[in-house]
Length: 253
Length: 284
Image 1: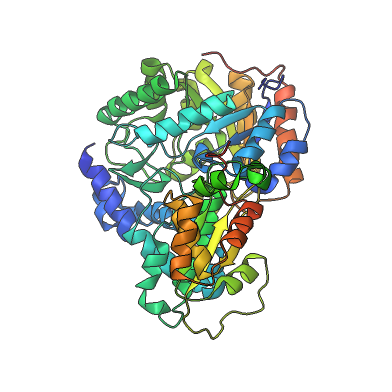
Image 2: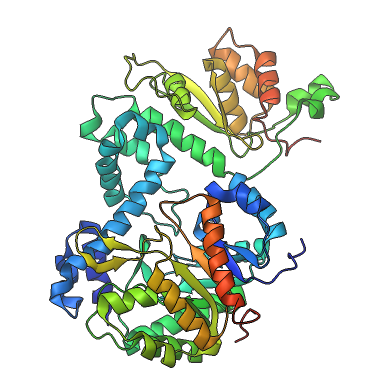
């Protein structure tokens, strides 16, 4: 046995072509059996992607999804020993995948599926609750730097696909393809307790949440958002964040 | 957390679809086995479910990704994930495979065949030792599902016996894999059973197989996608008559049936074990 065996076998698995591994078989007549390994490796990755990107799969159809997932696996095989979080970068791959150019918003759907998965797997943590800040004087509140809940993922999409995505996610299959015009859409995906939630944010709130995520104080984040969006409502955005549970409870008394 | 006060007799591999049923199920000697690779997230509902199930049933960890038969040393990051799960769930049994699945930093999610040569044995034993040292516990090594013989392949039972002798690991005897080996590459099951150290067997696996879609009955695949086949039940009876009862697990990964069906299969295993007397965790 040598390293050569493993290199050749890995080549066969990656290419799906048994040729490289053939010299290592005791009986050349068993070459066709190598397909068992090639198929297992590829299909494990494909099925993990299908489970991780259910709305992409629903919109493209399973038969279209499989070759796309296989092409992604060939370019980005798993590099950790688990398929649980596999598929980071699938949205960017879809952006460059020619066969789906008629579905230009598919990559944004993939971003939402990915954000859902990441929120689902993120560390458990108690979010900041309204009662925690209710008793604080206003200047203390303004100086708080709450940061985001560890599950929170803020997305700035190029297509307004949150509604389509959410309908599919909740089990509705009433529309496979819809006419859409490109338009920026801010979405926050997070898991305050057991279940993953998502919400569309106005541009000012996106700026506000992004600033908090960078470690700015509530006062700084509010000013920053107001400077760019005159109609931004800091009090309303803060209250929505508290009641929604997407701020971290860590930095609070 | 206190460990549930039961010894594992007959168990079931645990799937997320069955979390609630598993939590509510009650049966003497019932336990559940998980693949640690599916529980490496930082948090989330899956870990919470396992916390709850672990309070009422013993758990075992059965790894598929350590690649102990590969040329590289066990991945430190993956070992750390294992350690965390062992600390959190205090499994009654932990196991891995005589297989490889990684080369460099790329993981091939499957159990790939190891050429059973002296060089491979040295590397395999080194890796088993690294894993046991990192976890501070004995692991059980499962015999592989064989589809091909590799150039230079020696005797599988000798390979496993020598691994046990050198590393102090135990064995997980997969009866379905043993049956498949006999069918697919024609090795002698009775001879295999005579050559492995029976005392080292700490767990038994039972699973269903399916004929290859292309090659038919000439190649049986370890799909874990069907009920345990009749000849595998018969071989199980032979095995436990020979080595004595051991904690026995029904594995099912695809074409997942209702939980009740798996409990019924588990009951069949428990009845056969009971006919031989008390089951204990093997002390190797």
